Each structure stands twice: as C-alpha cells, then as structure tokens.
Amino acid sequence: MSRILIATSSGGKLRDFAGAAAAHGIDVAGIPNFASLPKVMEDGKTFEANARKKAETYSRYVPGELVLADDSGLEVDELGGAPGVHSARYAAVQGEAGNASDEHNNARLLRELADVPVEKRTARFVCWIAAAQDGKVQQLFRGEASGFILDEPRGSNGFGYDPLFFSPEAGKTFAELSAEEKAKYSHRGRAFTKFLDYMNEEQGVHEQRAAKFTANWENAIFIVWFILLLPCAPMLFLVGMAFDGGSTLRAWIAVLSVWTYPIAVLIAFLCKDRRPLMALLPILNILGFLLS
Image (tube, rainbow, N blue to C red; front, side, top):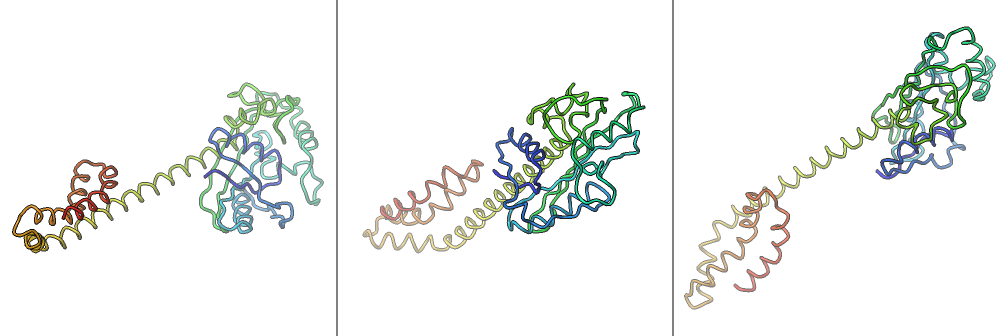
C-alpha cells in the first residue's frame, strides 16, 4: 500500500491526510478528475452515514482502487452538538445549496457563543472515514479530538474552524500547527491512524495464511513423494547393481538420487527453516542423477 485515493476536492482535507500519511511513507492523492464526477448529496443524519455514502459512490469510478471518504465536523456542547453534520454549511442561507465560507461559519459560531465563558465552550472535532473498493465499504474508522472554542481566531494554517479550536493536548489551536503536527492530535489524523493499523493487521493475516499454505503444500509434496518412492527403492537398487556389474555403490546412489527431495524436506522440517535446504534441492537432484 504505497498510494491512497481520497474522495474529496478539499485542499485542506488532502493536506490533513498527507500530513498523517507522511510518517508512514504513503502518498495521498485525490481521485483523478474528481471535480468532473457527479456530486454526492451529503444528506445523512450522521457523519458515518455521509462518509459511507461518499465512499461507496466514488469508489465505483476507480475500479480496483481503495478509496477513502470522510465526513467530519465540529460539535459544541453549549449548542447541543451543533454545527455537527452541518459544519461546512453552518452559515449558509437556509434553502441555499452549497457550503458557506470558513469566515462566515466562524463568524456565526462566535456570535452564538458570545455570552458563553471559555471554560464552558467545550467542543470536539469528530471524523468518520469509510474505506471502500468497487462500491463496497470494507471498514469504518472514527477519530475524535476534544478542546475549547476561543473568542478569537489564532493561527493561519488549517481550514474550517481550526483557528478557533484550541487543543489542550497540543497547547495550540489547530491552525497554529503544521500538517504533520496536526495529524498527531486531530480527529482526522486519529481516524486515519486506525485505518493504517487495520491495513497492517490485514496484511499480517494474509502473510500468515500464505505461509501456512506454503507449509501445507510442502508437507503434501513430501508425503506423496515419500509414499510413491518408497516401494521403488528395491527396484532402483537392483537396477543400479545391474548397470554396474553387481556393485552396490551405484545402486545406493540411484536410490538416494531420487530420495534427495524428501530427505532434504524432512531435514528442513526438523530444522524449522526450509529456505536454505529447499534452495539446494535442484543442485542435489542434478548431482545425484549425474553420479548414478
């Protein structure tokens, strides 16, 4: 997994994902020609529902690719969890389609919290990420970051409500952090980390299954080979003696030449490491046949 496609046209979200992926050597990119794709209506009542809908829809446009889609927003306790799923369009005129600007959203938030002391301005950023392929969601991941809403913006990085959201863990607003720093504390960074952990676990499971399959296959070959060749040993011994004037030397070599594989596999099995001996098998077989 060296590249992940993100279903978004938001430069801020792409920077957030890139910041979280940088430490893991993963490249993050938007879906090619994303702006030309039909827009998905984010009409779900939860972040999870919107993330799922976007991931299912947009992953169909890039067959075989793993696509991440997220929905996230700000929940302020004094406002009953608002702006919530309406975070991006909080200040939009009712009935008007499309998102409001960050400036207008922040201005409305400050107006509604004007009489609320800072200690009661508790809030959290919430992010749900859906990973989908070919229209099917494979897994969902949730991240959360708790903090306070300040009475004035601080910092010039980030986007959305970042300048107003103070993180006690970071000791700064999200807008005062670089993309890499923000990934350590942000809701999106934490959800993305859960996604990476999930992918690593899945890769480990696949590797274990492959190793088990290989071991079982080698054992099966050894058993079949051993059973088939065991009855042939007396015949090979007699043939070897006939071609060498009754000498038992070539007779034993003839037997051992075809028993090279099961013997080597047996030794490798007992040593718990098959790779070195298995690599020598072709050479051992060739030498055995030449000598016989």
